[in-house]
Image (cartoon, rainbow over the protein chains, first blue to last red):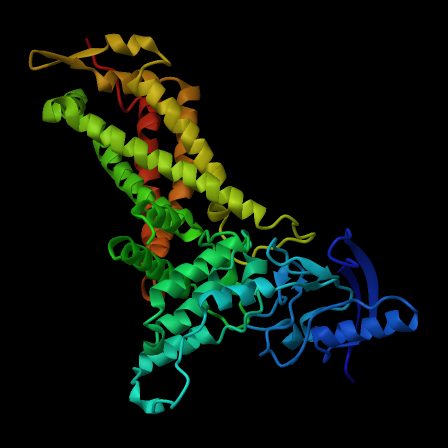
Length: 255
Length: 238
């Protein structure tokens, strides 16, 4: 028979952007170990709703670990204790009966709390819009295979492109820095031939937008890499630094 | 078109640009530490070796070399300190609301105390210059001269012996070197990452070299006050 867990949750509750939030304690009883972390919250919410209380708001969408919607800082670690796992793919078998679990929203000035555990991550959208694209003319499309990409480059770019933009890197960073996200998005295009024409401009603009959003800077502690559900490497941060230095130098000496 | 000043200001005014400058100045200071330690270790070869080295250093290029080095180091130091303080303030502001249950997955203690170790090193450097260069801490150092083949030169050897004969002064130097050691253990590899010269292939090596470099600087420098206090480095017999 499947075992059930009785847990104590300490959940951040905040009714809207302006109000003061606080940690509220909830019992979570009879939780199956096969439930995902979000399903555990669903069960707790069912109880809250049947008692006429406001359910706990949290972000979720695909629940398959690929959309980047779920967030949650679980016992101080974004997406919880399992490596390379999103909150939706974290299962309750990772916890023990009687555990107390702290559930907090991602904390960053650039990610304001909207409600309870839901934060506004539109800062990432604005960083993307500042340079995370390539410009392609409309009209007759070129033959796809006319631009050759070396296998190593394709693999490397793909490893950066696996970033789902969840923001766990920001939540984990001691400085609430978005460097891993920006590095992944910049590198993914900067490595490919299609990304070359706008490479320098992209690098500088995305870093400037990152700063404008109020994220901190990288101090090379690599907490981001440790919690990233897609295991994006901090090598991309080194590459971003290098691309930025080259772009800044090029901008200085060319008109 | 943006002017040169605008381009330079915007490039090096961003968080990544500031860090590039912190890394470059950090690299300059790292190299200086190696040179400084090599000079210091001449004390083990006796007063004549140390004092003649110091004399050559201060008279090279008609005495201008030491001032070129000092001004360069001062510039690197000021840029390094001012920008890291500015970056640290931005970093703090980026998370106005702390976690109720904070956790650290892998960040080292050294990496999390860079500002603290850095500020202690700053106060140490100020004291160190007042102590051994300007002689404010003990003006009697001015009178210490050494007879180097008939030339009267400053007696650096006796200054060191006199300075480190004091337990509190030695203790402060040793504490500062311990914090310098932690600062370097994180700073060394960080320089390479920030300059974009670190990759998965080199990360292990850089971490190891950083640790070794920090240890060499620590052990080498700390050995001197310990040797003075332990009587291995003796005052010049008159």
